Length: 119
Image (cartoon, rainbow, N blue to C red; front, side, top):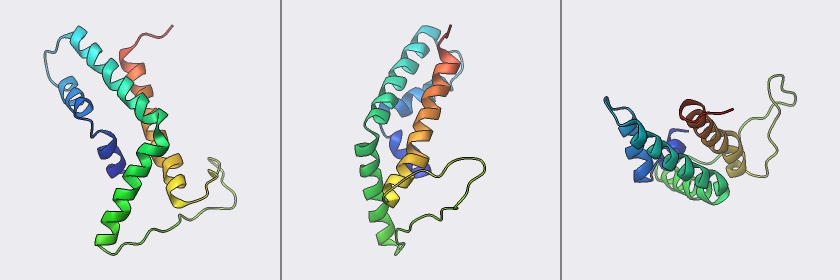
């Protein structure tokens, strides 16, 4: 999960904007502009989630191979009480649907809730 978020934030503008937003005495107009830019970049990642996550997943598999960690399918319960099982064909699709996309959606939603006025 951390690798996904780290790689999703690899765009230097996103990383710099998050650091800027944590500083004291920032210009509100500039801060909102940066939040808007980050939101757009994250939305582009979300829109291209299949391709973007494929890059991340290939890198994870490469690194796992270096330390002899094999890819494995997650355990799936037959019945779930709190949420439904996500349909998937392979491990990559499972992690994309259960980790990568929900985290991007959560970050985008959090930015909208905190910085943009909704009616």
